[in-house]
Length: 152
Image (cartoon, rainbow, N blue to C red; front, side, top):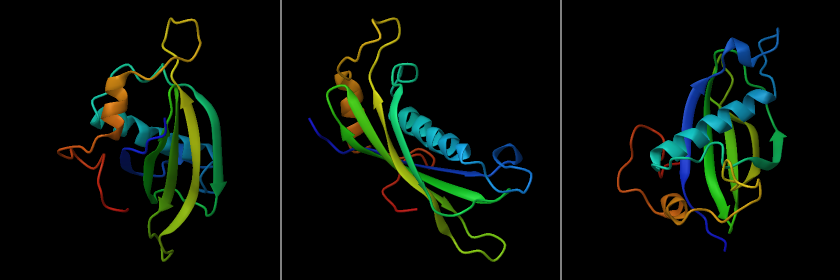
């Protein structure tokens, strides 16, 4: 089964804890930005029980430009594929215009999660049908900026 689905946009700033002493972001900050977008998507779609049941099994990132302390960041997360028990997300992390620097793509990539319910035998199982519906259906309203049909 291959389905494309939902999209989330998360906006934040690069915090001091996201940087090294030069004010340039740590590569690991990208994971935090992307996971915040994932949490927004799951929350917006009304899915409960997802966290703790969807471990990452593959993660790839292409780093393209630096992000700086205090810079605004826009992260876009898209469900690229939903399989029987796995799901692949694609993402882009954009550094917004700051200090005379133009808006530019800082990082992009994808990652795959697998449905492994807590307290189970730690083996993958099919996604719950209501999660698939929530992640593939078009929302009837948009709360905050979690999902939006607009490009960032």
